[in-house]
Length: 164
Image (cartoon, rainbow, N blue to C red; front, top):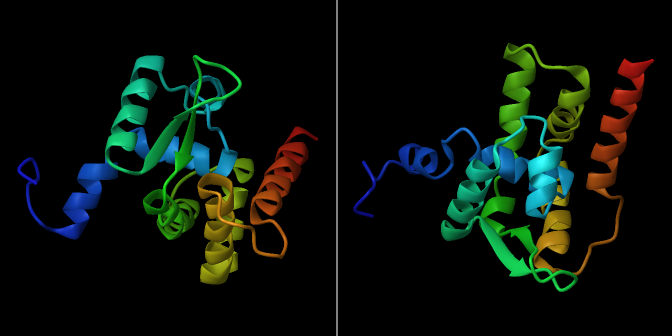
């Protein structure tokens, strides 16, 4: 706690998540299920540099937001997973997406998931968090439709619509 400026919860959250890339990395694991370094590097719309990505992944693991295990299919690869602490950021992402949709020049295809989360509200966020717990923490799945699939389908439909 010696490196912290204060005990304010907003300040401490910003100290943990407030750099340019940390939330983007978490977003890509959360909404894109991008769990390997190379996939995070090559499939991010924002084109993060490899040294920055390596640093952020190391920081996020150290802060307990991500976990890292060796990939059993390849000795030089690792699989990153969201921890419970990161999964509980879903409402923050939903609120940030809603604010961005209202106040910034977003694109339809990249904001459609935020729209679905905003419209679905806390019940959808809870379902999504439960689904993320299954994917990242190995919690047995609950019955019901897949939120991830619904978000992916909405994104793909928006991309197809904008290409037409």
